[in-house]
Length: 444
Image 1 (cartoon, helix red, strand yellow):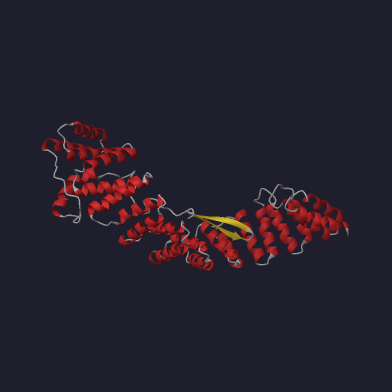
Image 2: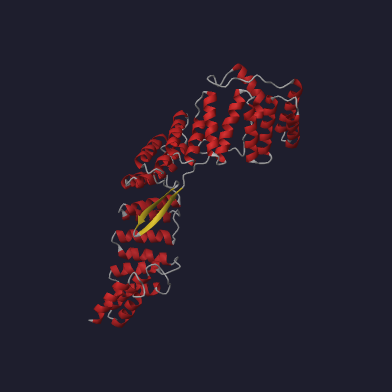
């Protein structure tokens, strides 16, 4: 099965031009429910003793399959741990690091004390050194000792999974989450979100969708990023009806989401439901949700694509009046295309002429000339196409010579027409047409 790229790039017809509309769906950990591990990763060491006290009075994991370890810190080494933790609080990382390394080198230190030391070193690697690989290494060593209280161990395991995901170690992240789910006997939205995003990056899209759906069901607060990810799982398999269904469901939960609205509009196009795309984005525009240049551009392209040029023109003019759309070649070209579709060649010529002011070649001037020719403004068309041919090369250069030949014929300049058609024979796309015209002109 072909996998479509996500973020989405949809090609929409604007007049005669195909224009790509990029859409960025952010799937960062912070938006999909993860934690920014570079800023706050393994804080468990600072709270381990607190967690032990808390767990003595309440058990947040009543269904845990992991048995609580019995190991504790000795009275002598407990003082060292307290000293190191205090140094961490005070951001005296060198002092804390020295004590934690002393603990690891102490032959009398038990697994609990060593696990605490590794947790502390993970904090230092994160806070002082910003060394993610070291954070993962120390956290893994702490987990492998299997000596910390459940609350601390489970917290570190979840953090390890999240950080592994952020470092693109997706298989490790999934393994860690599966272990967390098994050991805790608990279902947590964040755990399923990490699992789903990791599976998505591994291109296991159906499994990813199942995990993300579970995360959404468990979450008390709707998470926009998770809905995006769920849509992506179906979109990239070209399962557009499913992607549409998920997008529509997401909008019911997050009716004010600009991101979901735009994404669903793009998916409607892929699902061959352009009318729904236009209706959705038109309503969003009227409600003030589409205010950026890219958003307004997406809407007017949809109008042109849906053969609704007058509405496209209105949106472009409003966008320019509000300063959202700059009066540049791109948007003025789109306006010209819309006027042509609306059978308004004079207005189209004006738009193309203004667009030509920003062009580095003769293409826009050629389009102006062509629409003037359609409006039977032959002298003006000849002038415009002559100006276009001063800025070569450009895409429609051969067609420009054909157009010039037609203008010259209508204006009674047979030698000028012959010369123009001869020039057109130099282009493969117009050679046959030009040769035909030359034969006809020679008989006149």
